[in-house]
Length: 168
Image (tube, rainbow, N blue to C red; front, side, top):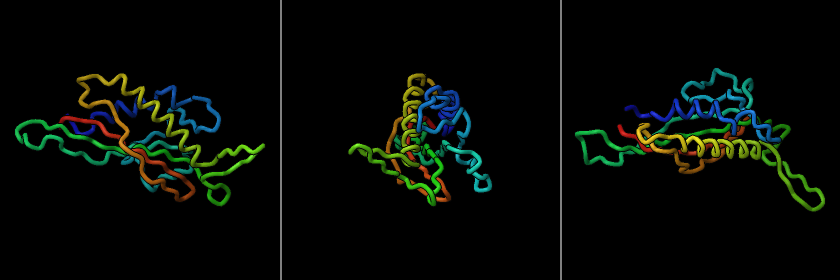
C-alpha cells in the first residue's frame, strides 16, 4: 500500500471523462483531456498562460484514524486539493461582471467560469466513486470543504478539499 493509491486512477478518470472534457457547454472551460496536472509536476517556470484552464491536484495531509495499533497497517484519512484555474485578466475583467436586462440580473466572468468547471469536476468525481472497488486501497472520494479563492497573475483559482480513507 502507498499513501496515494487514489492518485493515478483519479487523474486517468478525469482525463478520460466525457462530463469534464469535450462537453460543449457554453461558458464552461473545456480541458479536452489535457491540462490536468499533479501539483508537484507544476512549477513556477512553466508559463500557465500557455495552458488555458487548468485542473491541479495536490495531495496534502493524512490523519491517522487508529493510532492505538502500532503493529499493523492503520487507517488514515488522506486529504488532497483539487484546484480549478481560469484566466482572469483583472485589467479588463472582474471576477463577476453584472448584466441587467429587462430587470433580470445575470453574472459572467472568471469566477462563474471557474465555478461551472468546478461543478463538472464534482460531477466527474461522483461518477469516479461509482467504480471504486472495495479492494482498491482507498474509499470513494468525499468533498470535505472549499477553501478561499486565490487571484493572482491574471488567474483565478478555486480550491476544493477532498478526502478518502487509505490503509498505510
